[in-house]
Image 1 (tube, one colour):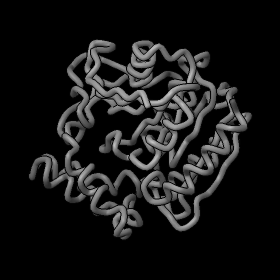
Image 2 (cartoon, one colour; image 1 turned 90 degrees about the horizontal axis):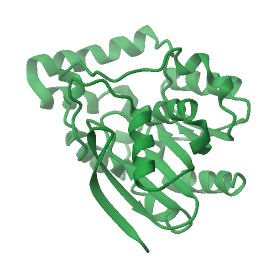
Image 3 (tube, one colour; image 1 turned 90 degrees about the vertical axis):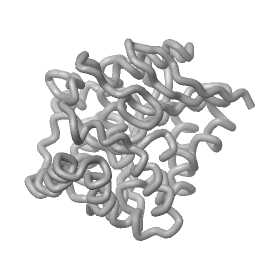
Image 4 (cartoon, helix red, strand yellow; image 1 turned 30 degrees about the horizontal axis):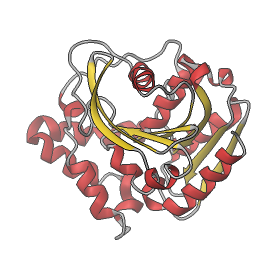
Amino acid sequence: MDHQHELAEVNRTQLFYEIAGTGNAVVFIHGFGADLRVWDAQFPIFARHYRALRYDIRGHGKSALPTSEPYAHADDLKALLDRCSISRAHIIGQSMGGEIAINFALAYPERVQSLVLVDSALGGFQWSDKWNASWMPVFAAASTKGKDGALELALRHPLLATAMENPAVAPRLTQILSEYSAWHFLNADPVQHPEPPAAQRLDQIRVPTLIMVGEHDLPDFHAIAAIAQQHIPNATRLDVGGVGHVVPMEAPDRLNEMVMTFLANNG
């Protein structure tokens, strides 16, 4: 199997990516604080049938940290696809990766064959007071105790409860998140958000869209799934029983089967 990984100079930054396989392209986008290893149980499987691409978003994994220069994750992805000579792809995003996938579909609709949104965030969504309050101690710890203090609290956040209770997932997830730079806890991120935000433009997404959410994910993410299901014209929702927010790691076989079936039915 053709396989490549490197740190690429794209869009005035450096993005680490891995690509393997041939055929129609499938792109995997991880969530906040994680990196491309979230997709370890998906990448080699999908690379048997597709040209699979996964990468570390700016500020995560082996990719470069943001600078003071404004940027957009959707533009980073577009530049990476151009570098890899991928004209159109199935885009799969988890958590913040789902938000990036949605923004990319709105900014570059001609580059998207389908969307898979896994426990997705959403630009312009009004997060609950409980959600916002739950992260205040993490940011406070970053200021007083540094990276290690912030990450220790982040690993105990309710968002990760079911994953951290799973002995098959917890050690790997701990390793991934513990290696996050924590840059965003300590710095003002110059990332640019689309205006109007995606939450107001979901009806513009015309590609087939699969919405997946873990049964035990937090209420805000179930609310986002409901909004996406309601407003994206060609959307299907599948709830994944018995798991929480990190479905690619908590239920990898079920996710693989569901997404493979979806992609087979959508080109």
